[in-house]
Length: 285
Image (tube, rainbow, N blue to C red; front, side):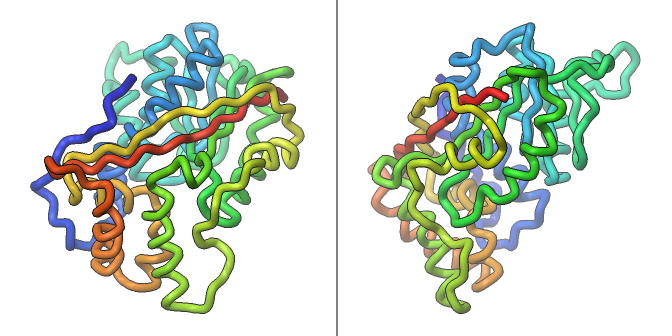
């Protein structure tokens, strides 16, 4: 299993406002690997390998794609975040444009969907969504139309893997996420979109709304481990789950309150360790 305790980033100024490029690097260097056990569990369950043609919606900076490609899969990633996608491109296509570079290894798209899994336009047999839903009201709303647009590119009977947060009582990060909702609501009248407890049927609801047939599920332990509090704050803010709180107050205030919420999870050696459980739902088209 991929280690989740990440290195100390002492060269960064935690009080400085983060531009999009900095946040993308924080995601790639600190936070993204926390979900590696989830990626591995899904790939093991689905026997991802050389015969797999995979489309990843919201591929981020590409770690899940990289793991699948290492298993021999032909991978395509789509993401609207230009900075994260640039990091994915550096990981997956380091020799892009060079003479003799393997153009078929991976494909990455910033907007829109590709015509198919390969140059021949063959359909995908696996679609993955590794951006977990279930911690904010309405956080699946954008997923439904994205899936509806992607499903025509999949083969008949293809597999779709959806992921979400586990029950709040199994996720030590849940109280920290509540900080985002509290700060947002303190600065303006409450409105939908804040933190909420994960509902048991979040993933099944998405499947039903997109016409998918559930065909199994699982839970995976994904502890969030950080070398120190500074790395924890930077990693958590890179997820985007605190963006509304930053807009409602300011980044320094959010960082301060997130750091305070992390105190119960600090260990004597200064590291931060938060056990979490994530859930995946396997569906067929």
